Amino acid sequence: MKQAARGSAEPGHGASGVSHASDGSDASDLPSGGGETSATRVPPQAQGGAVRGEHTHGEQPFPQSRPGPARPVVQRSSVRGQILQALRTALATGELRPGAVYSAPALGERFGVSATPVREAMQQLALEGAVEVVPNRGFRVVERDARELAELAEVRALIEVPVLLRLAGAVPAARWAELRPLAEATVRAAASGCRATYAEADRAFHRAVLSLAGNEQLVRIADDLHRRVQWPLTGGPAARTRTELMTDAAQHVGLLDALIAGDADGVRTLVGEHYPGVGA
Image 1 (cartoon, rainbow, N blue to C red):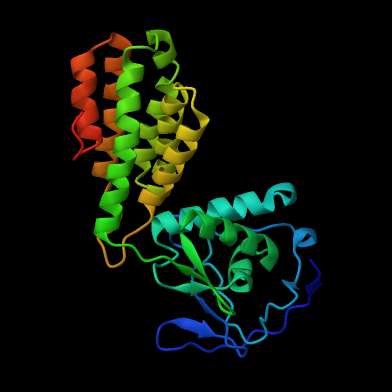
Image 2: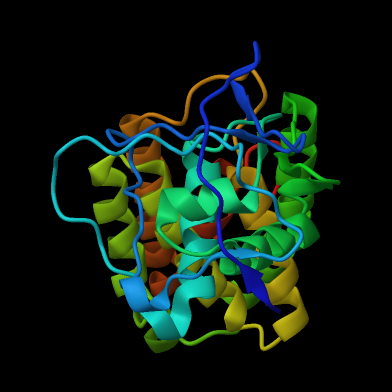
């Protein structure tokens, strides 16, 4: 796709905190530093201008981050993938706010890349249901309530619990023992108190468990549901506390211990605790 040079940025915010471009496109500002996710940069030779048809000449740029550790450099060969991961992290931590609209050029300024990989990553998030396309403006972060989150959690449990209980009596103890590093990784991630870091470790553990069933479609569906339950609620409570994350991670270790020991009753008890609301 051909690219055109970016125009100069001009300040201007509406009452909602969304910057307004002279062409009518809007983009909300992400916080500048101090959060759980650091901005991502690419080498200058990997950067480019805005894509043709994307207007940025009146758009408010993101503020510069406060002084701190050097930002990680995005490798040119995997810009899109790393931007996608950075956006998922921003969604999990609430840095991308529910209901807010963000344009690809503005996010590109934030991450130090052109609008193209950002737009591609946001389109992937739109397919996953995390954002929705707003014509001539960008992408709006989907707003979700407690009921939707509870429904997703229930669907996830209905899929994972029967599979886990079936695997408990079929998978050798040695295979379960191979998953111990992943369970211990969730404990370390929980100790950090970072919700995004824990979400990735938690997803890796559950994915490895379900992979033992040998059903790739099952793993993909469960993986998608896991991502969805990480998104913040609109006007809801803050992210889970470090203590809550530690409790969740400890259940992974306890469950794995029971699976290795062949303790069927213990497995059922721990599964019931780990998937509340759905009887095991």
